[in-house]
Image (tube, rainbow, N blue to C red; front, side):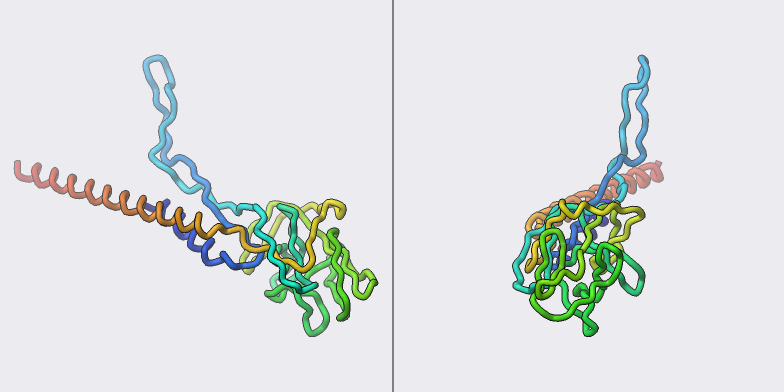
Length: 229
């Protein structure tokens, strides 16, 4: 019941972010609970567990569908594991939220206000004009290159607001970067699959609950019988 409840909470969060740009769905990793070793006359037979235990959660880094927006500042990352660096009031993080815009000061920012950084770690400041973003992340305004977006790979951990932290990262070779201008990457959550999984988990929770109630009733009957002796 505890595992089902935790998994339902994870699915609920996935569904809540089904329309969040660049969102990566989460799933649970399981391990055996109270695992015991079985021994026989000839030695160890094997191991047996008492059921699943949550080992942790991880994000599924499958690409979401690319949606055309017509906004020349929007970008969608085709690289499966890459993310660009951003700066917020809390520090520097990584993001795949390619819904970009210009701040009042001309700084390139995400939809949450995080400053997009170039390969050297500096904010990208640009004038308004005809913007062209190449597949390698080169940004040109009216034919003049002003910056290049860098993509990084690492052991990313979600920190909220579509941001990731990472202890150590490696920059992806610019020749291997594949960015699409005028698109955004949608969430990789499959709503139908998540809803089906939630229905199955609700049924499993109910069955486990009925089993626990049945066990309690059997124990109570046994206690009553023993008390009557």
